[in-house]
Length: 177
Image (cartoon, rainbow, N blue to C red; front, side):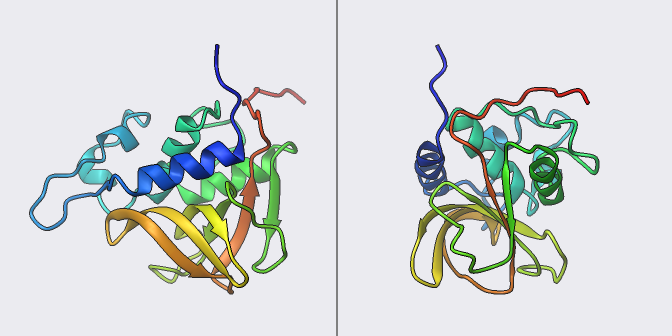
């Protein structure tokens, strides 16, 4: 019997995963990202190195009990190891809340946050899972911050592209129109 996935479980799973810590090839150490990239069979540790924030979010969603394939039909650009795919997925499934913008009062623990221009001055360049929301600050579990996972304090500012909220109990269903 599968447990019911909740945003509370997602925030907890993300916080725990961020503190393992996962990392790519850093400081002469081998990568320990194998559990993060395992669902993406054509991706190697070398290819994932420095590019795994979205795969970290997917890993945490699965740990929290959310049943989502690696490439839902809503994802036209790539699979869910890419930030843009998460936006396509959320915008393409009416059961998922997608809220553009920064301080809308929307974000809560267990929501996914998409960023623009955090690391490489590009849209969709980073993402994470909110562990806690404070007044004008988010505490976010993230993968791939300097090629490591961690708990990061981020301001609610113009770098936030959008928030994604998976409904409690969400299970992906291939929908036909």
